[in-house]
Length: 204
Image (cartoon, rainbow, N blue to C red):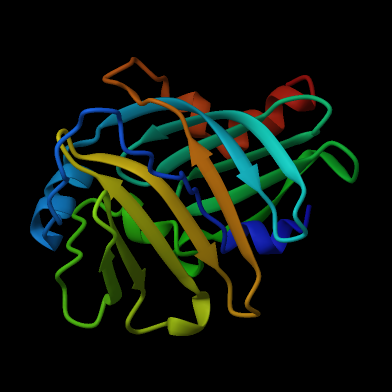
């Protein structure tokens, strides 16, 4: 997996209409912003489609604002963390105990981890579509479009984040399919601490 491609990568889920469900309604940007801001902690499984077409699976932890953790299943030796305004990538093949670090603000993931998500903010959303079952918005940092974009797909009744796809500045994309969210679970701050993880791996 291209680690730098991940930084512009996000999570995507194919929305499937349930049998007997009435036609979904298109969701407004304000509704989607309220939904994201309402998430404090969340846990779910994911399947990631990498830019080269390979697949990875694992568990995603979210603690807003600013924190996220991707634990990949074996044989993938990868852990990706967002915390302390940074992204930390631990690759068991090359950097076991020392994370590669990047500013969170330089990744599209920052747009949904902000303390106050406002998708209606001027120039943030550069695309919006509705296919009859799901609403998709494409967002980017209006001041730093070179950091890439993130496409978020939501279903309604109830509103749920079903997918996101992130495209980096070089055009590489990563898609992660999300399972059902488990909301409100207790998550210690250490779960998102890059320094704590480095110390633990060094035996400190």
